[in-house]
Length: 472
Ligand SMILES: [Zn+2]
Image 1 (tube, rainbow, N blue to C red):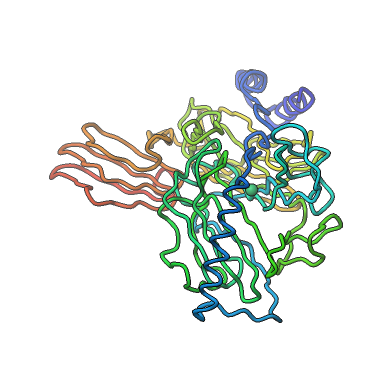
Image 2: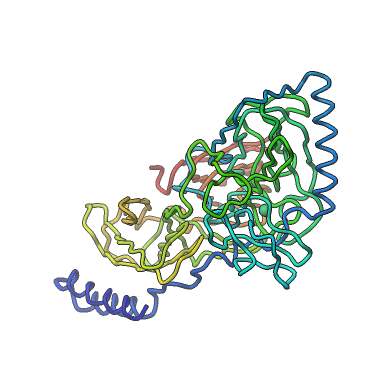
C-alpha cells in the first residue's frame, strides 16, 4: 500500500506540475492523510453466511411435506412427470432495472462434496470442504451436515438491496409449485426460526428449492399452480437461519437425490451440468463503482450505512469505492477521475493482494475548490472492461450530501416543517406532509413513489429530480 501511495504522489506531481505550489501541497497532504484505501478488503467476513441454511429437522419435515404435496398433485393431475425430459436451468436471480450496480451478487458457498465434517460446529473453506471444482468454497457442521445448496449472496450493500427489493428470485426452470413458506422474519443476521421459500417440481420430477426469501413478497400463486421459466417467485432476503440476504438454491432429481447443478471434477453427485450456460468457478467482475459522502459501512440489517452520494460541493470529501466479485490475487485495475471537460484529473492503479469472493477498496479525494464544476466521471478498467460512474461537483448548494438512513430506508415519513432535500441512490417512497411555506426536493437515482398519505399544503413547494443532483 505504501508503494502505491508513493507512486500516486509522484503521478500527482507529473500531472499537476503546472499548478500553483499551494495546490500541489494540498494534494500531497491529501494523498498522505486523506487518501485512504483498504479499510476493509475481504468481504468474505460479511458474506460467509455462517449458519446452516436449513437444519436437519427442518429439512426432514420439509421433505415429508413436499413429498405429500407432490403425490397429491400427481394424483389430481396437476403435476405431470415426463420421464424423458431434461431440466435446463437459467440463473435464478435478476436485478430490477435502472440500478447503479453493474452486478449484484457473488457466490459465497457451493455444495459440499466431502462427506467428512470438521470438528468445529461450523467449518468453512477447510479440509473437510470440497466444492464441485475441487476448491473448498463451502461448509459443513460437526452435527454431520454438509452444505446442500448454493448460497448466492447480494453484494455490495446487501441490506440496501434487500430493503429496496432490488434482486428478484425467478424460476430457474418451469414447473409446478409444490410448497410455499411465508410470514417469517426476513432480516436476520443470525440463525432464527424458519425461512420463507418457494419449492418447485419440474417436468422431469426434479425439484428446486428457493430459500431465505422476503416476507409477504412471494409470488401470488399457490401450491399446484405452474410457473414459467424466469417467472417472479420472490425477493432475496435473510429469513430463517441466515446471516445476510442471500438465496439458498437446492436441487433434487426425480429420485430425490441431491444435485449440484455445476459440473466439475469433484462433483460426486452428477456428471453433467444442469445450467443452460454454466458460469465459471470464478467470475471476476467489478460489481459497482460508486461515490460516497463517508466511508461506507457494511454490516447487519441495522448497521449497514452506505452513505451513497452522487453530488458534492467544494470542501466535501468524496469517497470513491470499487466493489468486486471474485477479485483474484494480482488483478490490476486502472482507475481514473475525469473532470467535466473529459480531462483526466487523476489516475491510479490497484493490484489485488489476495483472492476474494467479494472485496472492496476506496480512496478519498478533495476536488479543486475552483472547479471545474459539472458532471465528473469515475472510471475503472478491469479485466478488459471499462466501467464508469457519474457524479456532480457543484458550487451551488445542491442537495449534498445525499443522505441515507437505514432506519427508514428510503421511505420518508412525517411532517416537513423546514426546507429539506432528500436524495437517494435508488428509489424514494414518501407519505410525508409538506407544510405551507416549505420547499422539498426529492432527488432519486431511479424513481419516486408518492404513497397514500402524501400531502402538500397550499403554498408549499415540491420538486422532483431523478438521477443525481441538479436534475440531470
Ligand atoms: Zn445455503
